[in-house]
Image 1 (tube, one colour):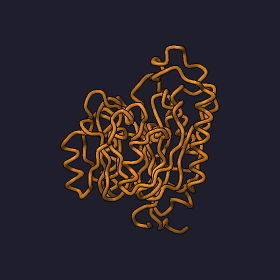
Image 2 (cartoon, rainbow, N blue to C red):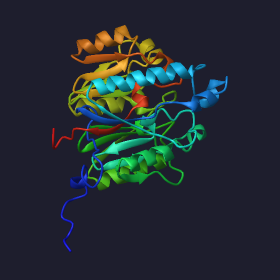
Image 3 (cartoon, helix red, strand yellow):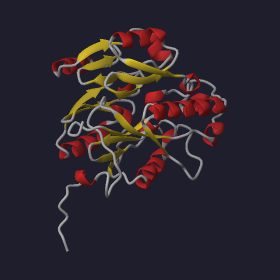
Image 4 (cartoon, rainbow, N blue to C red):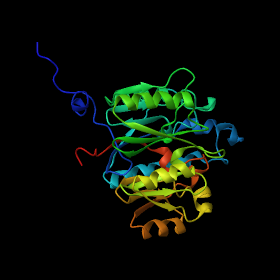
Length: 305
């Protein structure tokens, strides 16, 4: 008999699968995607009943999703897939909503919409198959979607309460993060906004991009006080219809972003951001884009970067 001497965190990558993050911008290593399939064939001619914006083309969505996954591979990011054994709900492809990652494992979400109920089951199985620990599963009347949690530093996270994450769910996440030694700032999203991800992206240790008037002013002031430069999206039309802010940070000032947003891309490049555009126009009709599609499993951690 020998005592177990390593900490839980030290066992990640050996006993447990490699995972974890404590920033939004350090080099991206691994993601979790769901390749859409037959569930999209079930979407009726009334797409709004499935929370979608327009009539969709399942074949085109599948093709564009494959292209996005290929772009991740070219960028050196490992891609894992959710593989439901039964037909999942139609929004299963939006993996970012279904869990959030901490430095020691995952928080399993609980989507707010009845249309999306049960998506988290398939993600839980995928995480288990990968050996990734689930530290918390939202319970009771709580709702939480991963796109409402953002890391400002290894010791500080930002949590949004709003249409998708309620107070009960946010409190459960906050309690877990407190146990991990992480302080949480809360913000409250205004009506008409879905997720924190859609209003704020952090692309480096000192640069945040914000959708003006959609992120509460006190939150912007917090970012400035923490030393972030704040840049505002230059074209709200591209942000709204082109999902120009719905990108994924591959590393410091390097993003995988939706193609077809020339004003935004030029603006980002003017900030020193390397932009890798991918065509996802068909996917956007399902009311999401690259950021929504991508569950982040692992980034370099501050302690090892």
